[in-house]
Amino acid sequence: MKKLTVIPIYNEERHINGVLASVRNYYDGDILVVNDGSTDGSSAILAGYCGVDVITHPRNIGYGRSLADGFRYAVENDYDFLVTIDCDEQHEPHHIPEIFRAVVDTDIHSASRYLREAEENDNPPADRYRINMAITGMINEITGYDLTDGFCGLKGYRVKPLAEMDLRQDGYAFPLEFWVQACRLGLKVTEFPIERIYRNLNRTFGSTLDDPEKRLRYYREVLRNEVQRWRISSPLELTRTT
Image 1 (cartoon, rainbow, N blue to C red):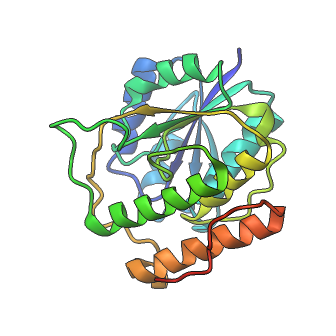
Image 2: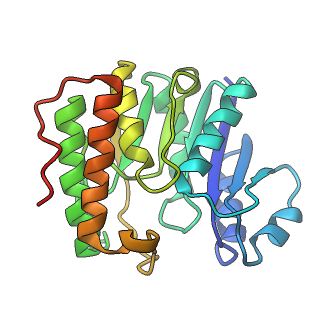
């Protein structure tokens, strides 16, 4: 079984060393870092690492493009299974071995910050939670997956089906087209609970998408377009904007 862990980064100089050390503590397989045009010291830090492959975007393109590039790298290099994990210390690397074990029996093994409540879980920012729940509900109506967290970046994948996806969303709407295409391909999905950690409360979604209502409308538009693109029958009225 050939395994790869992909870590997308953008200006994560504060976290790279700690995250890579923790990943290495729990996982001894191949690692790919996708550096999405970082302008801080991230590139210099990565240059000092041996045994870590790096794809560097010449400019900041987006989180979705980083994941898609990781998928393509896994396909082109004949990996069997892939895990994606963020570099902002909101995902615990100790989950990586269990994800690789579980994804052998499914196509996508997706983490959820809302599948199981725990006293130590952080409270999510209200607008992110509201949008996550609204969009996850729409994804479920389209796909029938019964997800509890449509946006979590910690996932395991069987690599072969990823070669059949046509992923075009460069930014944070990437999961929306991903789930629609997973449904189109008939992929099996399982969820597992993780800790809810919110440390990056100042995340920017870019330009007008920092406005929650505009972000929600945009996500609905992406879902609607993706459903129409693949002619997926869905009972959900995606054109509503309120």
